Image 1 (cartoon, rainbow, N blue to C red):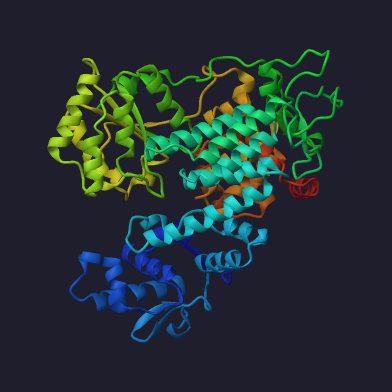
Image 2 (cartoon, rainbow, N blue to C red):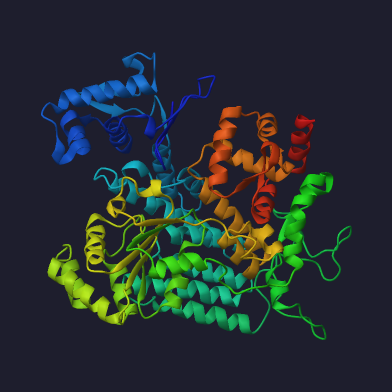
Amino acid sequence: MDVRVLGSIEIIDPADVGGRRLTGDDLPRRARQVLGVLAARHDRVQSKDALADAVWGEELPGNHAAALEHYVSVLRRALQPGVPTSRSFIVTRAGGYVFATDRARLDLAELRVAARAAEDEPGRADVREEIVRLARDLPFTEDEYADWALPVRAEVKSVLVGALLDLAERAADGDPARALRFAREAVELEPFTEGAYRVAMRAAAGQGRKEEVLRWYDMCLRSLTDQLGIAPAAATTALRDALLASLEGGPPAFDRRRGDRRKAVRDLQAPAGGPAAGPPHTDRAPLGPAPGQAGPSEPARRANLAVVRDVAESMATVTELNRPVAAAAAAPEEGPAFAGRSAELQVLADGPGVVHVAGPAGAGKSALLQRLRELYPERVGLGRGPGPGGALRLGWLRTVLHQLGVPADDVLDSAMAARRHLLPGELDGIAERLREGGRGRPAVVAIDDAEHLDADSVAELRWLREREVRVVVSYRYPSAIAERPLGALDADLVLRLAPLSAGDLPGPLLEASGGIPALVTAARELSEELALEVAMHLARQRTRWMPPAAWEILRLTAALGSLRVEQVAAAGGLELDDVLGAVDQLVHAHLLVEGPGGHVRHRSGLVRAAVAAQVSAARGQHLRARLA
């Protein structure tokens, strides 16, 4: 058996011909929690009292031993039907139970082995890469607030952040794009780790990107000051100054030529039918024109995107689909930095009392709320949720009150020192300050990435709403908050952010980005290599909760172009029902679009180019032969 708990629980029977697979949702809630506790404490006997206490806590049933035996029996029948109890991986031992990893593979156990190896052998990069591969997400997402799950999630996060930082450090001087990817993931997990920001600044400097050095430093500054009330360390500021000084006087420290894993990527600005004229193409945009030459326009430099041509040259459908991406690279940049969403902004400013803003990674939730703050600075305050690792509990409220010029640090400090919720009188005082600051119009408290707010914070938001303060929260999907405290904050309106449309973006940019705001920004502002890294990261983020068939479908449609679902199933050797289910999820995640006759194709040319770069020419030929 293959039991996976890093992310959502998933149980796969590799011996089953049909690839039998169960998820945590297929199990009764208490049975799932019993499995989770045993997996978290694998290879250690858990007494029935200890196990029941972890699962039920203060809600312990009268005959908890019998209830526990029932759920263990349910697990054994559901996970290993027909297998005798004596051979189950949930072993009865010493009056309790143990998850035996010599009878079933457990990804958490493998991660712990890799973590010990990383600690014992600091020089082994392969062990850190194994940690990153295994830890696709923090464990037990279905029960992340359970007391038994919290220490394991913190353990995994610490191990994963450490591995990402080690890999980023190793790559910083030789492969800055790779270093940036690892540093970005570390920051997403733990936004207060200054080491990740320092590596990102070094990598950006290695690419000759002064503005990126400044951007990463500013991100570090905002995270630390907004949430912790402290400034970056002197070493971080000194590194920023040294990197900026080095960029003033010479070329980038890193100038890798082609021949890396993205060798199929070609410059889109090359004329059709022939190689690009001029100097050899590098993975970065030039810092400036050569002496005596006119430099490229800033919009043209920013739009230096890419497309996979090794596959496209032998396939008319791929060439046709990627042509809009090339047009986006050659077209001048049009429109303001923030595009569209005028109706949504109006609703957020003057609409109902509680608005939920939902959308997958890269949908533009953060940019939308930041734009709202820019348009109405006198009455909109924007804080940030604590993230999966937690932060100072009232950091979001402190930030909002400071932005609106009505700080209440004494009240917040008192509550945090006592580790208590805000009292009714304190909340009434804060609401009164917000009303006064709004100058006759309702104040808006907006919280980005709010899905990890705790129960006290949600109760405080509900209290403020009752005092005529508008509340806006953003998160990925409604399902992400269904069993979290934020689910108790009833919405008057849920805004699900769709991709931008033809009315918001010029045609070439729309084709390249698919209307996905994060890719609009990447296409406008980043170099070719960084834009593809962003596209790949976004695709990985949006598919991390999907079955493996989803990623295979992205690869197939990247390599072969628009396909009917029957062709996808045939080319990938997949079951049609699995394809239909995964296509539904990919369309919902705005990675694929549907066409006439049951065809599906990539929404974004950038994502398609990034994914297609992983498909070898030989693999492409094999797939086409399978369809012939």
